Length: 207
Image (cartoon, rainbow, N blue to C red):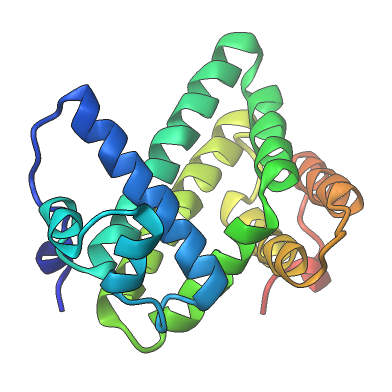
């Protein structure tokens, strides 16, 4: 199944329809976290949203389309955060602020959903393509940001070093109910600072 086959059905951009779409996405996120993506049906989603299945299909033609809607909403929220922080400080401060805010404010439900979708990506080509696209967007943004902040640094090597830490933060948040992300976030930011100052230690690079 291609990404083109799972895009959200076109709707008029009215405020009422935008609110209904957001309501469906909230209901879907609750269902996916509670039951997992694979076990959740469109009927389950309709019950959670207190809507008829027919109304759900007016906005999303499949579960994959719903997931793409969630991903797009996350991108929009991320863009707002980036814009807000860029107005408030320098680029290095923006980077630190984005990473600290993203990982400290990620809910356990959001982390659980991310793990579930990572697993689903190994079985569902549409979800796999969506995950790969999002990962590549994040990778390129970080590499470009590293290079802009510290032009002489090994931006690719630095990304390879920090990527496992970032994934580990999400896994820990999902698996540990009372997880305190603070120490791991400080370790992540310290490693980035070290990479800006000099070569990334070979032992800390991803294999």
